[in-house]
Amino acid sequence: MPDSILQTLGWWIAVIELPVVSALFRMMWTSRRDLEEAVQILRDDLADHKVDVARTYAQTKDLRLLENRLTAHLLRIEAKLDATALKAEQNSFTRG
Image (cartoon, rainbow, N blue to C red; front, side, top):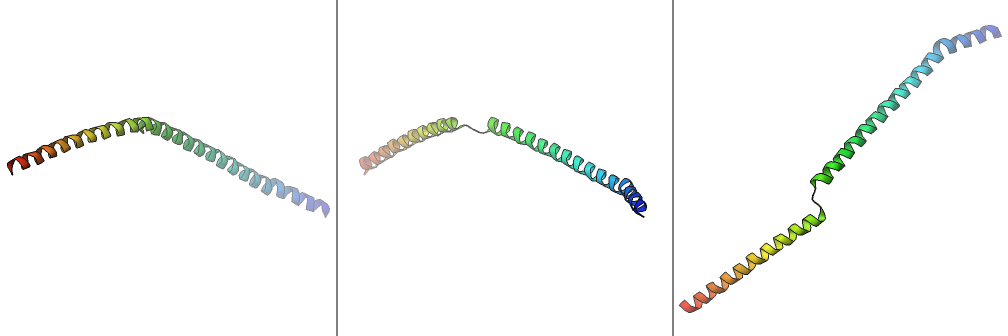
């Protein structure tokens, strides 16, 4: 009887367990490889996005220069408007 149990156990291991375990191992291996490939693709996309952001977005110093130029233009416009308003006010006093 013990021989038949050992033979049955050996047959079970050889015919059922080994193929099942090897199939599970292969599934895990391919899943891991697919996951690593997907992570690498995501890393590459993120690196490309970082390069795109660094290339296309304005730097702080450029924004400061633009702000200074706009402020200077607005101050000049304001001074011209003030001068025009003063002239208009003087003309209204001389006429009235």
